[in-house]
Image 1 (cartoon, helix red, strand yellow):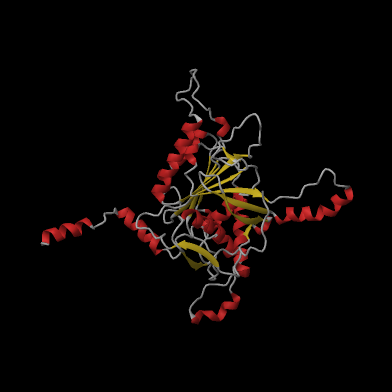
Image 2: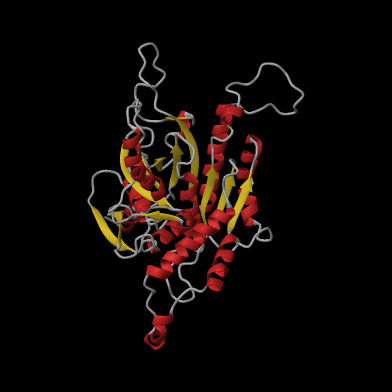
Length: 405
């Protein structure tokens, strides 16, 4: 074999990659826990299960979790084959429910708090934050800044009362017993975090689409905000189905005085889908969106409106089929069941069971079940609790699980 043939063979073994792909892979490899996208062990575990194809064995790495369960280390499942040679795509999560008040927005508060708070307080106490920016597109008018502040306060208080500070040099350990987070420091951190939560309130399908399409222009304009030196952690859309019943299924045949015709339902959802993909590709950020689903179809001897490949006991999405493969993980959220009063129950029996029903309400239990995208299969379930000033709490130790349907 002469030098020319050897050179040709070696050249054929060279893999070509763009600079963006190389830098993205390096950033992915440099992260100690690349699948810990949210630092919520329960959610990260569901994501790891959804992203890992069957086959190779997995490795386990110990990763610190948020302060909801600080006394025991959290385990993040990292597939052994998950360190890619190509670009790693950030996760896309759909939060859906069949009824209001199912905990979707409460979960978004907690994710936003962890994304924008700093990793450490000045006293050295770990807050498990990411010091990033979050964009919230609020179509329902439900996203409350005072409630977000309340969730941040509760999270910092739990970390202050139960988490161990990160280690410091030996010369500075004499005052370890006095480490704490004062009210002034807490409010300063929260105020700083809030400057990196960008909330857009939209009131129509056209304004929603225009807002998503203009995000790149807004975020790259460092004069418009204070997040120029922060990465974009997540784009949150709450919710994508807010204008579902305002969209015509087909283009009206009659002419109107409007300069531009209204988008049909299919056109609108396809445009939003394309715009979200473009934003994620630009900023390499997580996408979270909420939706409303219809309750499971009741069995009927006369009609069958549910497709045969979708189990009848699962909720029916309002989103078109083109969205089924879009999310990395689809989660069905519901409030914990409260035992109903049976029709034949006596007054004495109802009074006897009153405390049990009230305790369920006071627990503020919610649950989320993983749905396999496009296949309509039930997966692992996770419980969390919303308790007023206590914020949002995940029970990582498994000692207390919300019972949902």
